[in-house]
Image 1: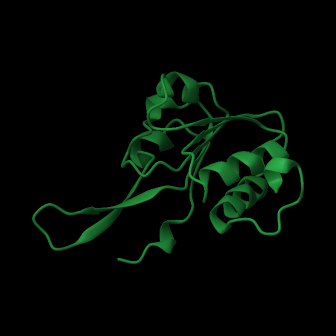
Image 2: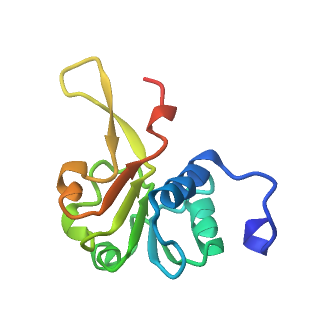
Length: 143
């Protein structure tokens, strides 16, 4: 319904949490350049539409898009939900960009009967560049 310009009956929880996190953080959404990595109907598309309804200029990309690194380096806000561990690196980010990681992937620890969650943003590398790095949805996965 949001795609048709009407208020939705409900908003998926992770995209709603992403908007709430941005608003509570004091991030200016209106007129910001936003890159959403991921196009799923559960989170990628809804967060793109929600950000557009807050008057952001949104580019929705997927893992096969050309020049991901160049496009993300121009964004004020990056929302990643691709499920590829450590895909987004610090050198992909504009200094002082706001980065939100909505994607997680369970990977098997080598030589162990154990799983761990990985982020789509390379956290250690990104914290030095970004103004804010937020994680959403990681508690939704049972191990």
